[in-house]
Amino acid sequence: MLRLIRFTLYVFVGIVALTALLVLAGLAWLWFAEKSDLPYLGRLLSALIAEVVTVVVMIARKGSKYLPDVENHKKEADTLSFMRGFIASGSTVQIVSSRLAWIRNSQELIDEVTKKAQGGTLVEVITPNPVANDLRTDLEEVGVCFFVTGEDATPEARFTLINGNRSGAERLAIARGSHPEHEVTIFDNHSGPQIIGMAKDIIRKSKDMANA
Image 1 (cartoon, one colour):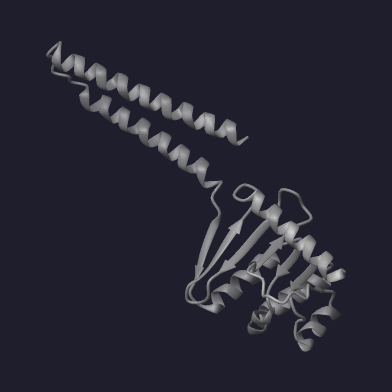
Image 2 (image 1 turned 45 degrees about the vertical axis):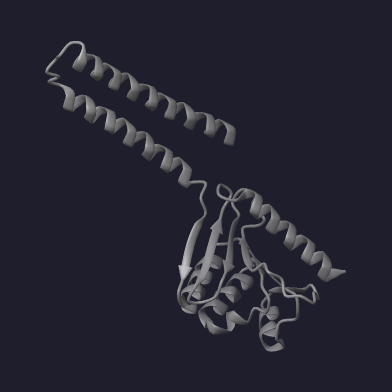
């Protein structure tokens, strides 16, 4: 598929380049050989510019599908609000975190996780060390599943995968940095199928490690 898209883009660029060269060559011939007044020069140049702009817009629109969305959050409240909406849109929710402590700072987010779990949505949390008992107990009671890998080092990965049970519909949010320089990158099946596949592998191997 990517080869076909790349070939199509090359064909478009080639057509535009060839057309532009032909127009410029024709104008040069008329100007220098025929000594014409070129009454339609403005229209020709306008058509050439319009063609270039059209192709650029088409390429940009096509290429934007394969770029991940990026959100920059200056405040923790922005991240928590994003997470609430992100989790709410999932048919399954799998969270890989270091401690899950951040969820305490938003009762709305806790309520959303509780609502999803109570409604039958698979909600899984994977951490290297056990989540604090008070938070874990409340969430376990509504059906949230916890997996503790027991790793000594805190993992670098911090991400949330939704729709992991629906091939092609997955969405992956990866966080990096800290506020006020906190960045969340959102991948889907167009912008990051390989990264989503890696996230699934991490989740699967982490769960196997926790159950070992």
